[in-house]
Image 1 (cartoon, rainbow, N blue to C red):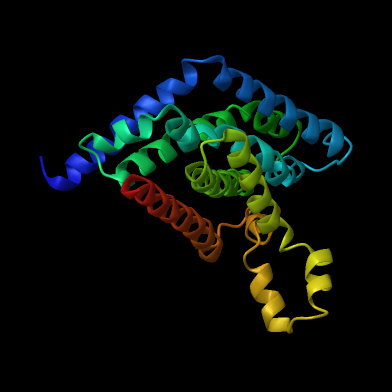
Image 2 (image 1 turned 30 degrees about the horizontal axis):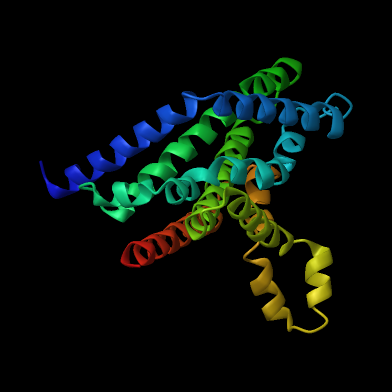
Length: 252
């Protein structure tokens, strides 16, 4: 087996173990039920799905950044905090796997779990197709954007989880970082910082907003390369930083 195949086998072995671990406890089922209930509530009640007279899921996707702001850190906060608290991180890093393989495996397992939760919202998609003739291409774009957004939040949570043994602290740090990245794109924030910064600097700050890059997926039904690159870059940077933290912990 080539080194590349061996490395990928290690990643997938860790991912399968972690994913199976989710469904071995009630946590996964509780999360999925809460996620489905909240998405249904915000779509049909808060977004007034039936009164909108529009065959689309814009209202459904509009609330995803806010739902993920709390639900994704709740899933990801244990990834490394629990390993550090129980002292199993040392055991994991003594196995014939590299830190990046462990990081990627854990991340992919959690991301796959979030993808499963997102896929289970298919009754909402069936409902909108039953009631009207929506642009299913736009809906697919919304799902792609939602999954990328969840991945970005999850990678940030991996990073904060590696920083501390305390899951609650990891959760709070992740929520704060994700919230700041969300708010950077809102007009109220950009108008406020425009008093002190140049227009170019304001645009730069806004370009780091997850909302700015999620809206083309969710509200316009567009999959643009720059938005995909943004979310992938956030994931890559956060996971790279996670690796730096874990290597520093192992070195210490």
